[in-house]
Amino acid sequence: MLLQFVTVLQGVLAPALLVMALNVMLTVGEGRDKPLSAYWRLAGFVVGFAGAIVFAALRATAVITQRTFVNYPTLWCCVVFDVAVFVVVILARRITTDWHRHRALLDVANLVAALAIAATTFRALPDVILRLTIFVEPGDPIFTSDMLLRALGFALGAAVAIIAALIFRTMRSTAVRWSFTTAVLLLVALLFAQHFTDLAQILQSKRIVSFPTAAFLALVWGINHQRDMTIAMALVFVIPAIASIVMGFKVKPTGANEAIARTHIAFRRRAKAAGAFSLVAMIGVTVALTYGVAQTQKVVTLSPPEEYSLADGVATIKFSQVSDGHLHRFQYKAKDGTVMRFIIIKKNGGAYGVGLDACDNCGDAGYYEKDGKIICKKCDVAINLATIGFKGGCNPIPFDYQIKPGKIVIQTSALDALSSHFQ
Image 1 (cartoon, rainbow, N blue to C red):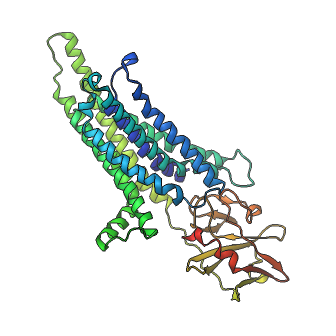
Image 2: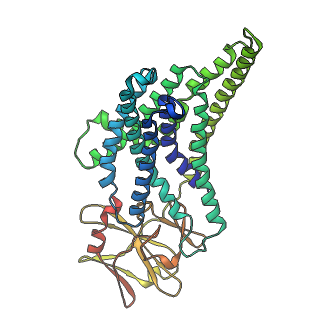
Image 3: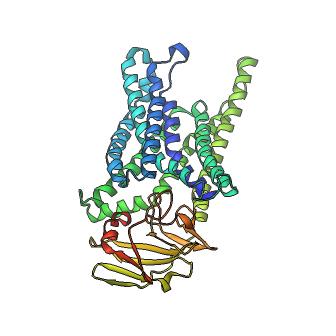
């Protein structure tokens, strides 16, 4: 449950904050006076969300095994739109003031916002959506206590991200404009830093760009602090939160008449509440993505690889070595230099489960044995022994092998063909 919660919270928070921030900065008019382009932002989210569902489905069914094929152009779009949105936010006050006189400018701003929301949503949500595929362990009944806990963690993670964004939104009328604008500019800058870091990582891995030492170290720092950037996206709203509380004390609870005095008193109460609740939301998000993540990342050490016979392109493992019903891990260096791992376990009924120590959903995190169950190290899902050796879900990726008298024989060419799963 906790792993689902923190993973979904981290994935949903950035698009939720971006949607909220741009809605606040660009909202004008009400009812019939509201421009049609205002709905483009919602359309951008719907398009990004639908695309994320399709991409996640293609990854879950192994139709797409190389995520870079999609992520590379997506990140270019994200980086470009982040820069464009930054400019829109700077000019937002001018764009929304007397917007009837320059409706085309507002339409352009809403179009840029819609594209940025679509790209950010499409980039962030596929990994979140894939969490839905691990609610039920293979071979188990649909409704179990573990499934309900995972579903609850998923729902709470998404709900907390959305609620935090809605709480920050309450400061749109209580904090001074410059403070909210500053927070949104910092939010967009952090999004740009995240997207640019991911893009630079692909450029470096594909050897398209070779970064100098200082830039490479900065890239490594960015990769290692992605979660910290997400936390910072929430913490930037401390600026309008403090401004809102200050305004709550600054406005006098008096007025020219009793009606105005009541309005001032209501504003003071609302401003203090908006700032205070926003601070609570920031603390909650920070605790969840620090202490909560730390609890889920208690290191599970994979068992060391075992020895086996390897000669003339053939790997041979004797039955006597793997017939005890426990997980056995082996290591192999592919022709392209990639160090791979594969596992073998004797299943109920005497058959052997053979597969890579990796899956299509969670990559090369690996599996470990606990209380007689084989568990994915990344998503903490227990794998049904009967399904090891078959494709699907979080199962180990299968490959061809042969059963011969007293031994399991694997052609190393079968492993070489799957080396990309460990890259």
